[in-house]
Image (cartoon, rainbow, N blue to C red; front, side, top):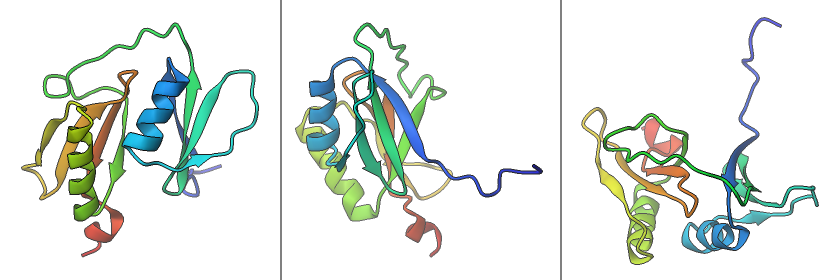
Length: 137
């Protein structure tokens, strides 16, 4: 095998400490579509995330490490790319839900809006207005 040029992301896996809190956050606050999940030994949730999936796995005794992205941006995360209207709507919804938004502005490198926030288990998420259709313009 020379390269993995045919590789695509199948899913992103995150650890959560409380299924109910995770379901509320990912289903209600973010509005992701929940997928059916096999009855594995480990409890969890699956969500549709574009062409791939988000797998949340329960570990009730987890000890997450959290760094504020303004001082330390190198940490595990994933980014949701949205169109500009959806970006604005989600940022407003997160603010109403009292989710702490970090850096909800435009980057200086490109004209892309970004906001960072944490789920209830301190998994960092980025949301931006860099949807693929926007990059092709």
